[in-house]
Image 1 (tube, rainbow, N blue to C red):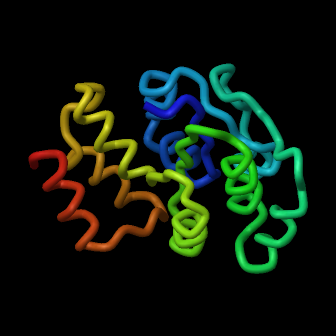
Image 2: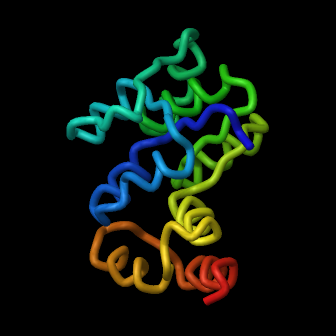
Amino acid sequence: MHEIIVSDTSCLILLDKLGRLDLLRKLFGNIKITQVVADEFGKSIPEFIKIENPIDKNYQKILESFLDSGESSALALALEKKNCLLILDDIKGRREARQLEIHFTGTLGILVIAKEKGLIKSFTNILEDIKKTNFRISEDLIKEVKRKCGE
């Protein structure tokens, strides 16, 4: 299991819209976000979410040339941590995480873990709520997640 969990903004926004932000606490205890991510989230941060910024801002600045600032700061922070899991949904950001050998998952991966641990009963029911948001998800990914959830 990863010792440190770093999240980008999209996971926080979607889980908040679904009323399920507490899943992160139940799964991981504390998670870390950067101040940029906190600002993008734009709401009060629950106490289990700790703000920590990368020490070396150079990599963050380089990433900002092709990624948004929240993803860039989250990637830069995750790069500084050992045994870290990064929660990241953006495809370009995930490509960069893969190149940097940073372990990552997305919001849907968090929901799969929550289903495996019995924290949610049905991914299909949550999927109906996800479809009411502006979160983009392909039909192929829906099928893959349903398969992983045994639905």
